[in-house]
Length: 356
Image 1 (tube, rainbow, N blue to C red):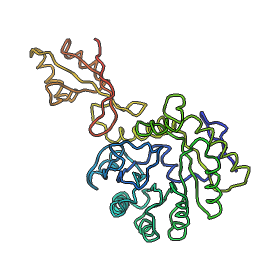
Image 2 (cartoon, helix red, strand yellow):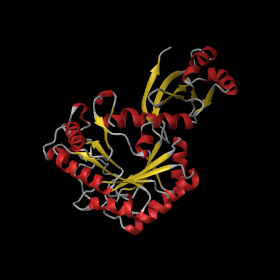
Image 3 (cartoon, helix red, strand yellow):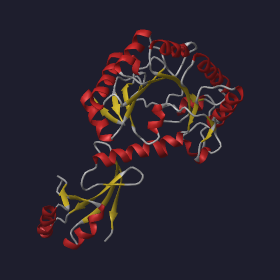
Image 4 (cartoon, rainbow, N blue to C red):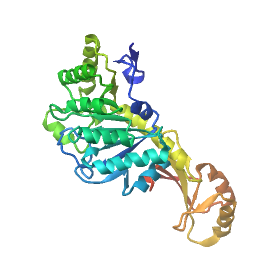
């Protein structure tokens, strides 16, 4: 059976059988755990920033973490029901990766879904079995060298995990993609994901030096989407049975990330913060006048639980409480609407003066 994707890719031919990890990514239910930037490959198209790649650092949903406890805190704060483990190459630090998987399953339960990305360079039958025993549900190989796709067979033979391939749609790579799909089909792989090739500060010079151009908006490589569509049509005509999924870059930004931010905001927003439709949060910052004439009014508002001391001589309140505050403390200071990402600490987006 063939199904159609909606939105900007309406009419795109694909198949049922999407990886479970992708199903949870759609509504933003996955926390992204960057376990290490160490990697044995030097892919010219890698979008990972230079302050992460080849550095042994850990992040969860863009927040730097330094312990397992911090990982649990951030996953809890995000309201996730699963996690994707990425890098670098997570298998470059196998013991840490195993420890993270065991901890997530122990804290959040066996139903907490975990998938992992790797080139397969460090994958051995012993390590794959250990990942399976630790609770890894799904593994996605990105074969960066000829022969690394054989790690798929190794995983299928030695584990109970869902096993697939996930690669970028490099313009003109239809033949390579079709070869991977045929291989997966022959060995009984479970899925194949092809991502639109993204542009970042880390890879833009390498891409430009190879003659690639950016598409509209400057965030994707021109021709990547068309290459993926041609490949999928070829796979369909050939009767390849393995499910193939195309992930547009716009989906990650406009849907996946926004939903994850909304869940994080809803589960961790403060009493004076409002969760916006785009997943950001907002609040009002009040800067009192230098003279103390408004001190009594502010003291009463604090007592009512309407405003909250900011620790810097000012106050914070919910956007919907502005009218009440101004009524109780007329002419008392300046009001700023603050918008931020629901990270910890908050990542400021903008700060706008509110006129009376």
